[in-house]
Image (cartoon, rainbow, N blue to C red):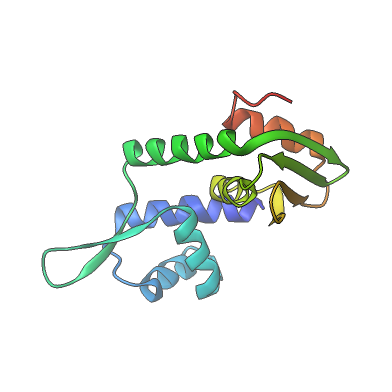
Length: 157
């Protein structure tokens, strides 16, 4: 978990520092920084960081990070999506059940996934009105509730 956070910070630093045109090049830079990751893991990291590719003006494309303003706007949209569908959150051990309004479970699950909680091992959207979360070993539902409230202060338990 900690390695992932430091790797994400390193990816941000590399994209800001170098002109990176491909995942292969980024994998090379990461390797020099001491990270051995697969292309699939890097793809997930880039998606989580919302990294895009833009024209460099010379018939090529380079990776860029979203601006702080874009990131804040995106995070606000994700939080609003969550709050629109959320009814309640309950837990037992490392299992969490989020009850949603009818038809909102996919949106709430996508919001949870988009927020990138390291505590969440995986999420499953129910057919209509609930989301199940499995938390990582050693993380309790109470721990997760504290963490999610940091991102969504409006959340009432």
